[in-house]
Image (cartoon, rainbow, N blue to C red; front, side):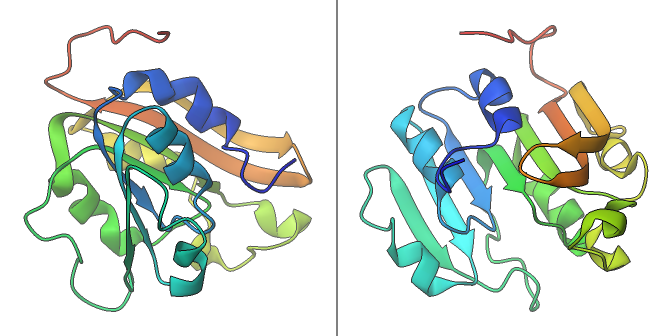
Length: 180
């Protein structure tokens, strides 16, 4: 797989995100999801602590890059609102309340990361970076309407234990359309 190929989970639920939406790509790394949403017409804020990685796509149209330490103190987006928040292969539980507070009332969360049991297949193995069973459902409970949730062993590039969530804000018309 090309390192810029977006996650199949993100692609599957991207139609929930309006083309002109303001999207936060959390821990964006090499920008695969930022580039994907920008190509769809979104205005993307790509956030990562690795400034060098951000420079590789910082001139792409529709993307604003921000080198920020997401784990080093204050939330770097105070007062900002996003129509969608995308996080793949990143977990810092202390950010969960900030993500919910920064999401538009009808916004979209697309989240996919490693879960408990992954240590048997490689890194990450530290429990601080592995979701507990059903943890993303708990993150959404009472605040978001879950469109889809999965957890378990996958065998993509390598075996891994993954948890995935696609959810929308409670003011979003239900049921949300799943295709364009």
